[in-house]
Amino acid sequence: MPVDPAALERQLLEARARTLRMTQDLEGERLLGPMLAIVNPPLWEIGHVGWFQERWCLRMAKGGAPIDSILDGADALYDSSAVAHDTRWSLPLPGREATCRYLADVLERVRERLAREPENPALRYYAQLSLYHEDMHAEAFHYTRQTLGDADPTGERPPRVDGAHDEEFAGGRFTRGARPGEGFAFDNEKWAHEVEVAPFRIAHGVVSNAQFLAYVQQGGGPAPRYWRKDADGWRQRWFDRWQPLEPEAPVLHVSALEAEHYCRWAGRRLPTEAEWELAARSGRISPGGVWEWTASDFLPYPGFWPDPYEDYSRPWFGTHRVLRGGSFSSAPRLARPSFRNFYTPERADVFCGFRTCAA
Image (cartoon, rainbow, N blue to C red; front, side, top):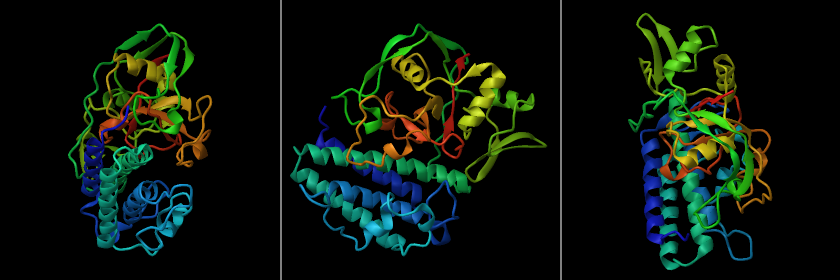
């Protein structure tokens, strides 16, 4: 289904506004922040968003090598496939004002090109690629602020958990993955194929704070990060503030390993990604407002072939775990049944939780 150029332009502007909203108050030392394996220096990441959009939407020459960037030395600064993570804090990065000017210049040129070439399918594809890329980095800025204890610039919260009962599915042959013609899809979603799913029962809602607290209090395992118990009871750090634990909120910042430990304690298990997608497509489970860990390793679908952005999926097959759904911070266009998020199973800094299946 071809995307309308006007709608695409509007989405690009909305994504950029969210990027700037997530980072507008960062200045001084906060533009770099501490060197941690799970975050990027914000100033580098802002520039990387612009570089990626320019690389794919403006610099791809027909039948040849990419043309030069409008920013001298941009490839040596912002190419995440070539610039080692630990070096990003010591690069000669442009200042905030120059970096934001680069972002604005790139976006304006992309908008002009879309207006000139509304029927160019390659341009539409690359514009959507950069749009989704920016969506994911805006969410990364958001969870990085939680990691670092910064203020929340949005006031957004996940919804309350809706229902602890199970939904029962008969299983059978099920078609999972993205279908041609349904809109933009990443290479790891391609293409739709049949899988056999055994009968299963899956929780209508994700695991709540109250459910996880029972596990902690009964000696099942430790509390999640950002929880503490004081004289007034259990509290949770929400960005820069400690607040009373909300029993009906979904448990957040739990790794796949912690989720599996909870499941063993509860006599349950994590769903496979095929089970999760079947249930999600049925409309019978409640969106949880968190990325949901599955039991499935991140592996290619049959016939996988990388898209032009070759490093999006292929380097991570076999080392990462699949998450499904979408968080309260995700762009709604990411929260589709076929989308596959992926992190290493010990990560818990992202806005992740889980739902369970009957064992």
